[in-house]
Length: 239
Image (cartoon, rainbow, N blue to C red; front, side, top):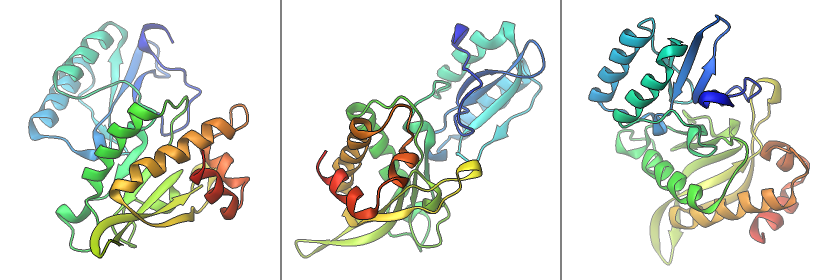
């Protein structure tokens, strides 16, 4: 797309980037906030950007990101630079932009895992190992209360404790195929009790297998829904 503006024909969660609004000459800029972690200084800077270049409005998304609307064409490049200077990003990442995490055991007594920390580690690892051409949702939730709605993600991760060589470690149950909106579905559990360390390579194999075996234009959800669980376990274990 020209001038960094994204095509409007995108999944509804693919809002990070620069998009033309219906109002001629105005744009909204979606800012990526990794798993919702943002500093007070960054919040103040976003408010200043909205006041200076937009309508003073900042919107929060269910994907733990931020939208700054009503940016005139003439200010788009300026806002992009200001966002980057604040230590945030306006560029779309097919892995990081769709990754959600609940509070986790850093602040919640119910959580079994450090969801936000694990999510950031996973994003960094997967972005180096796998190149996706369409967004994917990965939801990490620390307990069955499912504040991050693991059952709705393309990949859902439910925190649990895992025994490895007699040691109790943090881990996750792995679900696939969840969806929302026009693609509503409840994810199915494909793997149980995967330690955090094993999770990185497990998800790498899953995404690599999907890319190798999908049909043209097939989403991850569509791919998982046309296979039963036994087939998926085999496919994802042997890419």
